[in-house]
Length: 242
Image: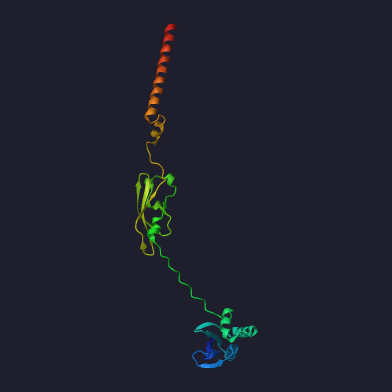
């Protein structure tokens, strides 16, 4: 089945020198075929012409230098009924049918998403890093693959270094071909690497200050004297028994 040709028509608002409104009716690419004092009569002319053709038809309404929408013959009949029922004035007719959504309009073109400018240096400065289960691992066991970033942008880890029992991450951010300057972040909270901690823990029983040491030696001397005295007493008892 052959596709029907769409015949285009236009109804445009016109004012004379006395500011009296009328409506021109014409077919696309042709001269004006009629001028009507009543808006309804111009629409009825479109309906009359449409009923005589086998092709699809559509009329566009023109006001104040712009198109206000278009309709086919079915909606044109609805417009006639509405205008007559509401007794809309000719000067407000086209404005009325647009306001009441009696005309078809093309969907507005989607707005292009506005690109938001990103300050990568600011984003990089507030970026933090972490290592999963850090408290169970030593800093010396960490590689760049273990370091995780909290930034939503591409994070490039340039290098990592172990300082004491911390990990220092040198990094920068990248986004849409741009790059931030390099920053450093220190990750803490790793398992202790102290090898002499057990000895230090035991030695702390005796204290480390001069006062603690003095008290220890006094206690040690008293205990020694008591032990010697006990030995002497035991020896004397044994001698008497003999």
